Image 1 (cartoon, one colour):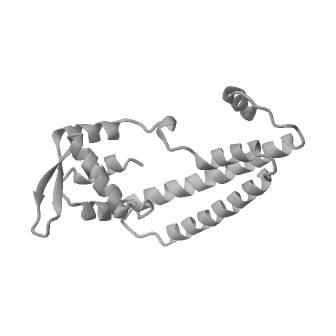
Image 2: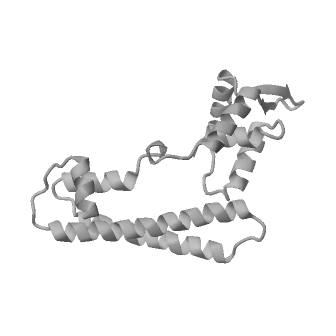
Image 3: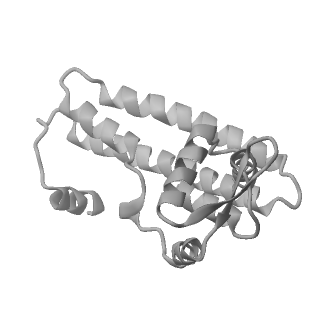
Length: 188
């Protein structure tokens, strides 16, 4: 998630100060991605440096209000119009963990997969309970929640797939393969 673009989106209509931006960001995402206030102010400093926001005013209590600039509006519009690519998403820690578990002697990869499946299943159950208690009218929260549910379901399917590959390859020595060769093997 781009905090930069999230803050620009929240500044689109009117100037706001950091704590207000943090609260609105968390409300819009159902608090699934809590922001540290330090992240907010660090990001605002970078946005100001890059000419995407500017300090609009300082309130009596010393809080700075920020507003989006024309360049910031252009950047935000470009972000909304550009699809998110797989390459631009953060590294997949679970995939990296499993790859390294295979490379490190003595790690029970099947146990790693089983523990992850149990944790993901528990998370999926919690998300499903949250959905049942859905708050009417909060479509942004519902979209975020359903995205998390679909991601958990996909992760469980992928873990099942990993386990079947491990079972097929049990007893075979691990070999280094080129990523394209591995993708071909997985899709067959």
